[in-house]
Every structure is written in C-alpha cells, then in structure tokens.
Image (cartoon, rainbow, N blue to C red):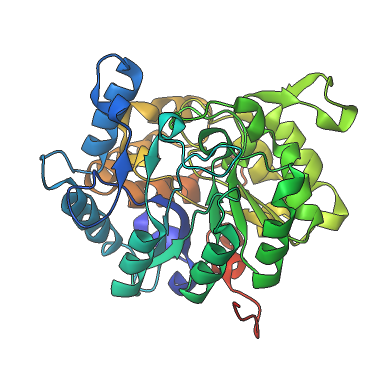
Length: 369
C-alpha cells in the first residue's frame, strides 16, 4: 500500500502544505503558549495541550522543543526523498491598534524559527510565514519573509483577530499579490486553536477581498466545518454550510488558478463525509486541491475513526488494518496513504492533489523590496 501510494508521483513535488511547528519555548524556538493551557481553570485547553504534546512525542519538561523537532525529522525521513513538509509559523492576536494581545492569543510560533529550520534542513522543510496585517511593521515583515524564502502566509482569522474582508488589509494584499505569496487561511469553524474566538471572521466569503486584489488564496480544510452567514445576500443573510459558500467561490471563473481547496484535517471523524466526497468526485477541481496533514492533529488518535471510514465505503477492511499499523509508526505517512486510498464510488484523488509544489513556486523575476 505504501509503494502504491507513491506510484505515479514525483516526490520532489510532494509538499505537505500544513504542518505546525510547535514547542513550549524551552529551547531556542521562541515559541510561546498561553498560560491558560497549563491551568485546570481552562480544562479544554489544558487537555488539548497534553494531547498535542503526546501526538508530537514531546512530553518531557525542558525538552519539548527539541523532541518535537526530532520527531518531525524522524517521520519525514521515512517519506520519499525529495518530498517536504511546509512548516507554519503562527502570529499573535493583535488588537485594532495593531498591538499584540496576549489575552486573546493561543500560541505563537515565530517566523524566524520556521525560517531557520527550513534553512538548516532544506532537504526536508519549506516554511510559511505568519504576519498579522494590523502590525505597524506588517509590510516590512512581509518583504523580509519573502526575501528569506517564505513560500506563503498563514492566517487563522478567528484566533488571530483578523477580518480578511476589512479595507485595512488592502495594502497588505497588494504586497502579497506583487510578491506572489499565496495566503493559506483557515475558513469554517475552528476547534483546535482558541484565541479571539471571533468565529464570524472565518467565513470563507470574507476571503473575496484578497482574491479581488489578485492574491492566491488557499482555504485550509476547504471550509469543511460549520455554517456562516451568506454575505453575498447582505449582513443579515441566512446561515449556509461553510463548505457550500467556499464551493460558490470555486465556481466563479475569475478565481480559477488563484483559489485552492486544501485537505488538512478533512479525514478527521468530525469532518469526513460530504465535503470530501464532493472534492473527490469533482475531477475538474483536482488541479485546485492541495494536500496537507495538519500535523500534530493527525497524530491525535481519538480524532480519527478508520472503522467509520470502512462503514462509509471509503476504505476496505484490509486497507484500514494496514493504515492502523502505519499510524502507530508514522502519522504523516498514515495521512498520506489514507488520502491516496480514499475512495468515493470508485473514484480517488488525482496526482495533482498531492504534487502541491506548483502552488508555492513564485513567479520568475519577483523580488522583495
């Protein structure tokens, strides 16, 4: 099954576009995690942190940063040579004045840490910057990230306090478009990262403004969870499935070539189903779908149910048994093989879904200021 998963693919074009670089800041990473995740006064966040550290094989105090990185490298070395992980930085929440807001921030993974890992292990990693557009130095930081080889920009609007539809983002979007850096933005409900908790900011229709400014937009998880207001019908529009709103954007010809779906977390038990089925069956979309794992979530055992996938007909019993064994050994390989085997009425994802590198290759001649 593993050999078959790689068949027909060029490993040098297989980039997992959604891998969180994490830690506890106990090394040189500069990672910051909200104290709420270490307090039973916030039981959900307390338990989440333990799940994430367990998933990343990084539970020993004082060694979390190094252990998390070591596990990433160990798993990636099991993949085909040439394939890479794209490491996501993650900025703080910022208020309307552009000031860092720790009270509403969940965690912070600095650009410099993701950058330094990618520069140290270029055979295994690429990196994706995260810059809040309200920051006074946002445009300067964006230019710097581009010079340092960032392949894209990551936002989680609800947790970071960003309204993608706000006019104040326009100059930032203009720079993103000029630099040829895609925006990888979460859309739909968010369950894993607490922060500003402004759920309405994750409405996929709010990403129109970026698209209309010429930005390439990658919608994390394909907006496959929850419902949002149909802003095309005005601020009092009815609630519509977020995935359907995203699908509406995909159907607009003006966004062809600049709007992508993304598969991270979509085989989790709370997401698997209708959205994945539609993406598999829409052959004409396969060139606009990008695979990502959302590690370390892919290593959190309770989030996945292979037996449910068998019941739904997405896998055979034999395939599920092999995947269960792979998962205990290498969750990144598990995620890759699972999605390669995922079947809907006899159809599977095409090779373009996994050869994601094309979406992150900057146009020739683009130079940061």
